[in-house]
Length: 118
Image 1 (spheres, rainbow, N blue to C red):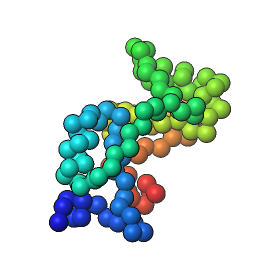
Image 2: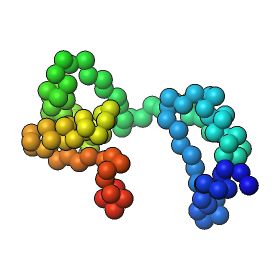
Image 3: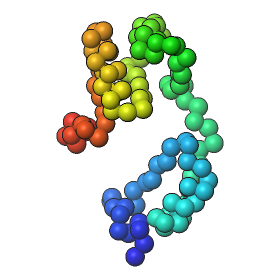
Image 4: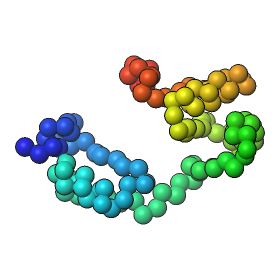
């Protein structure tokens, strides 16, 4: 019995999909394929999406830069925005700054209960 049989459940007779971040290199992909007994790999050549974009702040005051960014007209028109931070601590600081500035915001990390995540 392979690792896939032990750890990856079936849903409707089909094995669930494994998704990796864009930073996963070929070596990591091949190792996971081998360990999890995955025969096929689909590699996206382009992740260009009209509805997605990445912004990197070079502002000295990151929180002030974030607030200025979120108040730009083209950003205000969006249905939602994801903000990634390097830790739960910083995500909580960002959450507090946003809510205190009148934004509707929520945090999503390992401390959030399963019920609240779904």
